[in-house]
Image 1 (cartoon, one colour):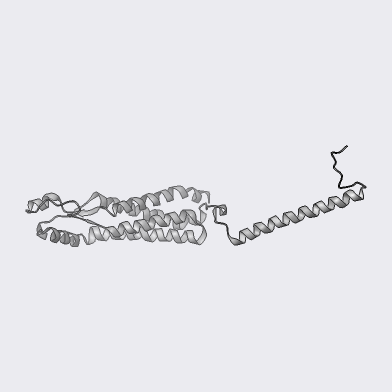
Image 2 (cartoon, helix red, strand yellow; image 1 turned 135 degrees about the vertical axis):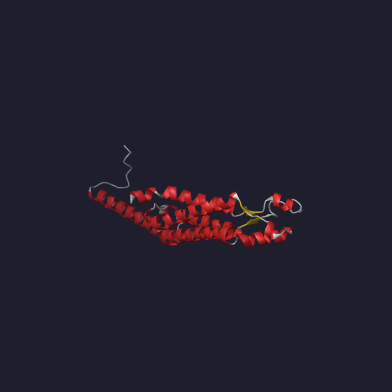
Length: 210
């Protein structure tokens, strides 16, 4: 149990870092045609955005994973397990998008880029940018962290109930407790009054007089 609780910080940090960097990488160029290839074919030097492909779906899924980690930090019980599962599914989705887009359908992306730039597809070479490898590594890290969270979350420390918003029921219970304390005080005061009368003392006398 203690070993499982000790994993809370490292796993959460890994999940947040992996999801966060994947969100950044998802909105950067993943596949790109070198500028030299375009200019050699007689075209004008295009901007990086014009000769590259992004995977915005990977970035969107990474933001979902980040939100799931945020929910996991402030919830308990079943909701926490659901958040861990959502983080796992989102990380898996990022990995699928990056692998399919960057390694399986990269030729389709190359064809789209060549058409956009007016180039002959046979003379075009597409490059996998550093951001693609960042997204790939971060999605793997986020996937591992989310899987560990789903398995270990029952043993992790939880935010105390004192941080919960007060409810009507808890307010009524507090009022009931205060009323009970007040009633006890009244009963004790009456008991002291009768005890003083039995002892022959006037309970209305000020004990500081005289």
